[in-house]
Image 1 (cartoon, one colour):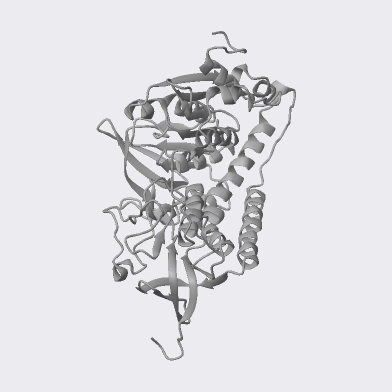
Image 2: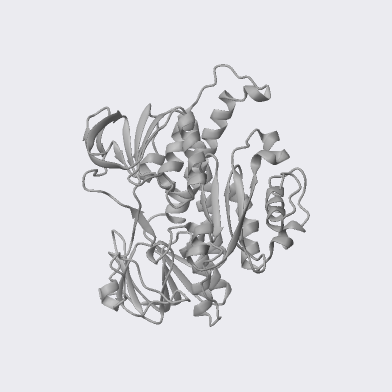
Length: 469
């Protein structure tokens, strides 16, 4: 310990101020704990700064541009629609600034000490926080690790000026004429779709049989169809081999069915997944158990094998979702306060802001059957909904999964406009143990997309109104 480095005491110390960490800190403060939060970069983490929020701003701008160019069916004809991409980036930056400033205000308003620097464990009750100029020791009763994840870099595609991760892809200052996206998961599909909406020539290389492999083929095929409409090339079962980079562009080589192919573009976006940030925290100093994949093992209360240290978000098992991290943050803070809170992931939604949007919650039909649950799957199409017709967005469907024995809702999948908002009602239904009848008997405003949930429930009960039985 350096001279003058007197330890600062706190009740709960949170490492990382992303959507998991800052929520955990606020909940802990609400429960009467003295809280310190440590962040080495920017408040709000990946999600607010270089992930969920800026990507949605880009996607929204892309939709506006596309709608301005292609609304002839509705009698709206615009000539010489132009795009100022620097203004798009200004809009995106403004959204981010408002939210990150809001997070800082919330932390300060809850009397949470914000500390800038990198945290390193000394023992189970002590960390050192270092910045460029100094180091400070903190002692704590409990700690919550919420350090998030970073993009995976693959050896043949080292990040550079023209080989970009998601952060670089979001921050381009000029609209590229062409891009290659390696990885057709949700990040690759969302950003590829956003740039395709702006008119960029997009090529997606995906190693699996389909893009968006975690969703049912009926859902991902709708996204694929719309990407192709925008001029995108989608190449599945493709193995990305390497990249040649020049000052003005890239040539990406890939293999399909044993044959090597090449595609040229301005940039290549590498979006093959994320890696947990657990490697520079000194976890070995404390003896925290991890899996072979580098994620921290936790119990039902987000507690590690070291009883006063908790872990949440992308550094524990499960999908790297901001709302999962926030949920776990509340559980950890409540567990520290002695509450009997436990994690339950059944009603955790997954959303892709593609075109159309995809959303799911609970069991899919296949997952339910694999779990030995006998279910009914009941579908209702967006094309039979008045609001969808008036929006001129009729692609898609809602599928409700109900248990055969009692009609209890155990899952739902939505492909269509506003699926990201509609899925919340289905999550609530699962969380509350509602039946198809509960949904069908809930009066939904007309004309709204929300009626599709009611209509699918009526299909489940065998008495649909707006489609033939």
